[in-house]
Image (cartoon, rainbow, N blue to C red; front, side, top):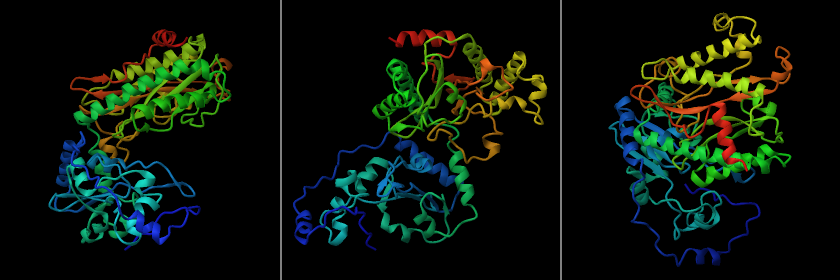
Length: 472
């Protein structure tokens, strides 16, 4: 079946003479010098583990499709995390099939042919979505096999390969969903694809460490840019752009929309409008992460005084959050329950709120499941798994994640916070509109946890000293 070319309403017509001319006179640009992606040896092991979990079954994992941003403009493509984990491939419309024997084939769209008859031979210069002249070069089949170390086949052979029952990672590519009837085990496949990423291998930990270090450099960039951003009506957006530059220079992009929240905007948990001005008397909550070229992301938050010095009230709130984070980090070790670090942080928060007179009941009562009144001021959880997704392994079963125990090689965030809303009449006026979160990335080790983001200070005195060295 010949696909329709993706052309624009304003594209000029192509004459027969031009079509004939465009089909001749091209050099052979096949590359024999490609080496395998650094993660290819690991993706092979991951595919083997997946096949072993579902022996004798066919498994289908698509990369995903291009998504329209508006009219005829697509978002920049980002492969599904499970697909990237198993292949290293980041092209749209590709599909990994693991056969009942355990053998794997990557079905992909080959390079645009330059001399094929009809529309197939015109894709490379006419198709806005896939044409090489429009979006860049794709690897041919042999090149893809060299890059990914897996057998490759043309995507138009996928239908013939999907005979009989199969488990499919559904909701990723509608055309793939339509090829295979639903399987009662599809959800189980989706869950396992999350669970197998709970423990990171050494390559993943190194990739995440690079992401963290690039993010540290991005935070330094932001602090240096504060004086220039202060003069702009949308100073938050100025700083967002500064961090975004670092993300594109050192990685693929930001791993998620950056939160650049000054003043009371810091009380909005996922503030991504970033359209506010900066006031030197306020705090700035910066939650951001660089995503590497291999799609692993950091997730770090610092709350910084825009003046370079915390006011007494700002320091009061910040110190309580810092104490909560310290208590949480102290619980991290193999065998500890995942929920332990959150509970340790929340006890510190509840006790502090009670000491301030904000929380009218004691910490023990507030922490009871039937109460939770302290959560008015610190609504969300205190951390999550981290990896290819900022909230990694989200489809894992509760018993393996939220209700599970920590294992060596897991990477997670610890991020307690206080969000004291500007219109909260249960708070004294001086506390209203103060938002503080401190978030760090840690890897579980044999005997505890390593702070991957130690390059950024956390204690308020150290934060002030660090900022003084960066601000003019």
